[in-house]
Length: 442
Image (cartoon, rainbow, N blue to C red; front, side):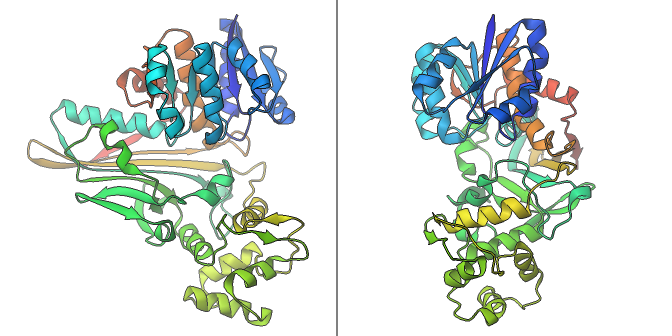
């Protein structure tokens, strides 16, 4: 019997697990779902006779390695820093691996050994990174086939709240790993702008608030995402002058987050004694305010705002100026903020999220300038069956099925899905699941 090991049963796993379980009966698959949370596994496998529950500590080799050894393929939705444990086991026992995370330095160093073992370690096979790579390279390759010369490529993606569930001043709720919100932009960002390398430090990532127009949604703000430059060689567009990968948010979110950042409330580098402390006391200590009666005015002055500014109202809505106890123990400001946001930005069962991705490609073809805009907008069905879970999980599940059934030629080594042999069949099936891009040319 063919065995699939899925590592991770968190927010983004439900479509991946259900997709593979739907095919398990036909192909006689055994699907092992491993996670530290047994309840989360039960919710996802829903009593399927083809599923096997494994409650393990993924960092414990005695618990993890026997599962990898049994598997024919490993699909990991674990936090990025944990993939390496599975990767080492996969190399040792000659198993193919699929993850949705960025290629880490540790994984990159395994490339030669993975190739030599005749294995595929497919990373960045989710939404962003993942669907962005596949659709971007499909566009790039199609332009190159007609001898077009691409001079500008901008790719935007964001997990947002759907308009009908948008009922808070931040226009945001959690549809994926909340911790990633706190760490977003921490390493700064790099991109190519008009032929020049642009470095944006963390402190300035959210302040520019540039915007793009998305049909039927209006204007969305964006901020540069990580290091765009590292994809220049992978995407093979040597003629490019502007190359940017960015994250989409509503404009007010970026302004509000810049305020939190400026106040020092997002940092994970400090240590706060929570016992006997309140949200108000924490904010006062972080901002140097000595009189609680003037805290609002002090914060407004520090941010260069009026006390009735929209951003000030957003901060008040979070409750961080109130005398709510912090709890006990020690924590960083970022961790305290995350506790606040987990309550304020939680999705209700009926809430729907939304994923928006847009590529803007400008190129010369026969001396004529052309702009191609390719856009995907998908809404979730509810909190559990979110658009984020669908767009992260399905690409991984589809590739796993195709590898097991020999429907694709596996690229060897530590790779991302930028090759036609992968993106063509995967994008074709994603379209059957409603993940479709609308293209406009001008």
